[in-house]
Image 1 (cartoon, rainbow, N blue to C red):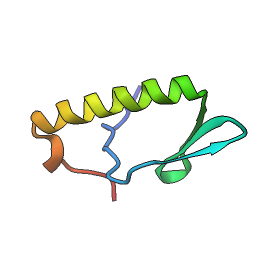
Image 2: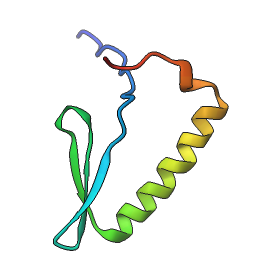
Image 3: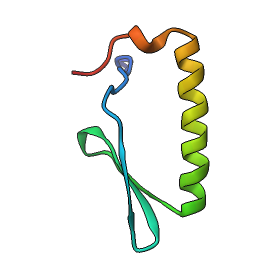
Length: 66
């Protein structure tokens, strides 16, 4: 079995919008998820924490998808 190639991070931010009382997050390459307001808030907070931690680790200069 051939292993999957390592994932490269996207450098394009997602865009959040509200639709019928839900939060829709549209990302690069057609990635999209729909969240409840509560899940969107928790996800946003978690993403912000992880992003700050990644910056501390120096990942900002790592390779990204084209």
